[in-house]
Amino acid sequence: MHPHLAGTKPNSDTALFLLKHFTSLNLKTHTTSYKTLLSYPLHSSLSSHFKNGSFINLPLTEPSEPGSNMVHAYHAYSPSGSVYSKPVFVNYGRDKDYRALGSLGVNVKGCIVIVRKGGGLGRNTVVEKAEKNGAAAVLIYNDEVDTWRNGFERGHVMKGVGDPLSPGWGSVDGSERLSLDDNEVLERFPKIPSMPISVDVADAVLSSLGESMVPLEWRSTLKIKGITHVGPGPTMLNFTYLGENKLATIQNVFAVIKGSEEPDRHVLLGNHRDAWTYGAVDPSSGTAALLDLARRYSILLASGWKPRRTIVLCSWDAEEFGMIGSTEWVEQNLINLGSKAVAYLNVDCAVQGPGFFVGSTPQLDSLIHDVTKKVNDPDSEGVSVYETWAAADGGNNIQRLGRVDSDFAPFVQHAGVPSIDIYYGKDFPVYHTAFDSYNWMAEYGDPFFKRHVAATGIWGLLALRLADDPVLPFDYLSYANELRLYRDKLSSMLDHKISLHPLTTSIEEFASAAKEVDNELKELRLLETADQFVEMKRRAMNDRLMLAEKGFLDGDGLKGKQWFKHLVFGPLNDAEKLDFFPGIADSMTRTSTGANKKERLADIQHEIWRVTRAVQRATSALRGEFT
Image (tube, rainbow, N blue to C red):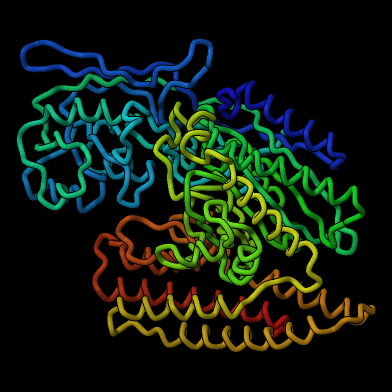
């Protein structure tokens, strides 16, 4: 195993490896290439300077094997810059953390802020908030590690997803590209430099701080015990980062198993291939599962099986740079996805550790429950994945797909494709570091590789059900119950002057349509004959089940995040207390300059109406009738 960063020859070699593997199994294969803007480091340095005139140079990457071609620790799309200033510890870098510092009289303007990962913030948001508060540079560490204290968590700090030079369309050869100095492009990147640092480096800097004491509310969760003060200084930091953004070719690789009866309906299974380092967990555990699924499906094909619908195995490139490979492909194929995609099944890190986790759009909940009952639990004898999952904290908890951290995001939030995301292990301590290696996986992540077998089995069986069931195994009663739950949570948080009546009415109408469809499905599934009339009825029903999710899309997108179209599931900021209805959540935290209470309430009410109309569109699609 070797490092294979997107846009480099080693990663191109992995594309060729997958292509050869699929071809050797007699699967129809092809690649799709894009020329996109990627970001690489050229030079970085960090040193601490003390009052007595001494200084120490701090390491900015892990020790690596000679000739490994390990990329130095960096934040992709960070601007280049040099800063000599006092450091300040800002906890998670949330708005309330800066307010807490302000109440102590601590001003971060012109300082280098030290941030610990967490608090619900992505890297880009951390840097954006630091910039807004006047900081000159940002250093981020992950204190949720112990043994791997000298690991550096790489990542990108770009806003949004996809190639920044082709927002909304696929960056194929000959297509339009925005210039690097276009305002729309510049808005995607931070204005101040940033860098990942290790826990050891963070400890060395933070333990030297003076001035104000750490706020009381931060102390109970601090992992580095030497942090007693927040600064600024008296230590000075000298930080330099030099990087380059350049066009590079990326490749998505596909294997297609053509459907025998409905070849124009597609079940898509995707995993990204590129990695910051060795990537044994992220993403090679998922890539291994994809390769094994191809082998299993090839065996089934050789035995005479043909899927009813087309199955497509997708290997995405440049996910680590902001889901670029999958986003460019979704943008390029948006119309076909709208009418032909049954579902998208994502596996990023197949195995990170113990415990089964899954996220989905709600109409697929019942299918997930059914399939996990048929797969043996990898860590307990004689029980299913479903049983162990049910006994875990929170029971059979299915997450929702409003996050923007893997390749399901463009499918759900831009194209409205029903989706599932599967993985073992909540998180892992060597994430995006040079320690994400086969040795770590074999010793800690999955010593007997049984979790890999379980994750692959679940992934493959989900696809078989979606590809082979004559009537799609969707359940919109689950969706209706989820929407009711969201409405109730929202109601408890709103000003009494805001009306939820239109939203309530639309959700109840959706629930009524879901009940009608459920009754129709029961009748259809009882029909044993397969004459032309029955097939037409099944086809019409499946169209309704497929297209309903697209009703939740809004052409105008979220305010300030127009690319994100889904009004039920989408990206959130740290101030929001809702993890659904992102447009409403944004409006509840938005503070427009000069806006009075009446205007703010009107803004929230407007977003409620937008969700209402989205639910109405989904209802119409589910019923399959014009109004």
